[in-house]
Amino acid sequence: MQTIDLPLKNMHCQACESLVRLSLENENGVLKVESVDATKVKVNFDESKVEKNKLIQILKNLGNA
Image (cartoon, rainbow, N blue to C red; front, side, top):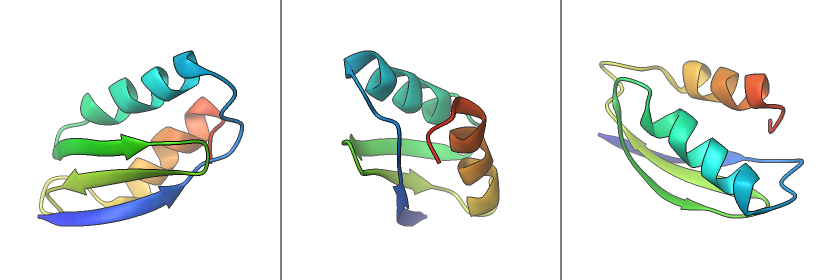
């Protein structure tokens, strides 16, 4: 298991936070989204199932990376 902080941008409201959390939690290999705030998200994940770059791509697709 690995824990990382990923930077965020364009976080405007509670709905943005929820969307980031749900999108990451739905990815196979993400064990837990510990916290989301206006500038970063802390994610626990199994690096044998999902790569850090995939998590960054999820955030980019949402417009938050």
